[in-house]
Image (spheres, helix red, strand yellow):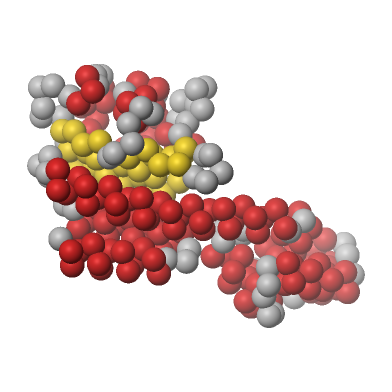
Length: 238
């Protein structure tokens, strides 16, 4: 257990992008014998679609589509239960009595079983900016022991802390750039020169270079190549 904690903690601490966070979540999922993970933002009361609150996940696309087709987001009792507890919560559909008297609808149970998501663990997490999130792991393994539950709680707190730092850095970076700077950056990432971008946007290449140099300074980069790489890492451009 200590070796697993050490390896996972090192991988999580080294993460510098959302891709690396996703890879760390996949490793955690595998190490604890689960198959799927999802990190979601706490949905607003009026939200009915999982797809719109899903941030990072390896869930099958067909599962997400079916989940949303049946409008199961508002029918799942997990969010309301996690709102009142801090430690990770573990349950299995094979239990006759669910923790905290959670009641799962037959539609949700059938969908979970169809994708072999029999046992789950979920944890409520909170950003320093007050935003709420949930991390779920699902699979067909036996229920977690208390020792495993304690261990996974610490690991999920760690990975979320790094994710939240990256998320807030993305938000700050996005707020620094103007819409025009982002537009120029997107065309640059597609291999366009300043002259070509100028023709596309009906601007002079000198103006395009000015926008690019402003973006380079704002994101503390040395050149265009580094700027594009950083913008991709921060998901400012796709």
